[in-house]
Image (tube, rainbow, N blue to C red; front, side, top):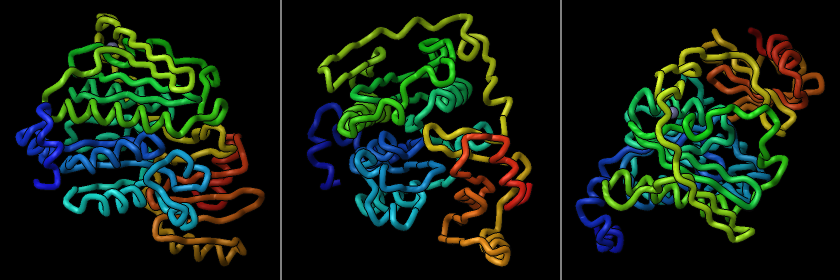
Length: 336
Ligand SMILES: [Zn+2]
């Protein structure tokens, strides 16, 4: 506990709060810029159990803002969950870190979150946030929403019984209508700001002291503007927290999802179990494909595409934005 002396000296945490952190469990969904920065702060603060989930691997263009990762991670194409777990463990060997390399969707979210006391939104799209929202309302868990794009970020703390993300953002925006980190760019320093505000919210929720963020905080670091909008009251006709309709949780979609701005499609076949990557690699090599097998993924080139396959059956097909084509490439080379 000596390690946490200064944190315990802070009256808002104290010895009791530090002991609570050691017993607490947090799930971080998505380990891009926000998720990886929040992980680093929480593991340093002494949160005892942390579940981390991400479907992607580290790439060089992540390094300007995804604070935990290194050039070696990118070179070795390590899954973010695996790399993040290792770095976090080096920071704090006492932490119990459970890493899952998986797509977060209606079928996987329960396993991904487990019994976590608080969820941290590390996702990069509103669709996934709506899913997290449904799960948190259904399971009565608090979560911290955070989004960063361009030079600004937003965060809100959503708690059971209060308004939910659907109350805050009732309308699903038209595809392509919101700026993304691909279209508008992003300043890495602002990710750190927002991730650490979110991590502070998590610490307060776990310790049970302090004043939680009461609204939607919007921080524009580039224009130096700070806005705090009140959360709307809980809407009685909100489909999620008012009427209890969990449309996203109850209708797991499978199939092909476009990956924002990456000229790539993720294919996630519904009935597919785990894939033996070694056997698949051998089959592909026999067919004349160039393959690269790591401990966590298999990558190969076929036709004009780069295909990355994960043991859970998912594949990311790079070189197309056409979901139907991506599915047929999957069927051709991996098999449906
Ligand atoms: Zn609601």
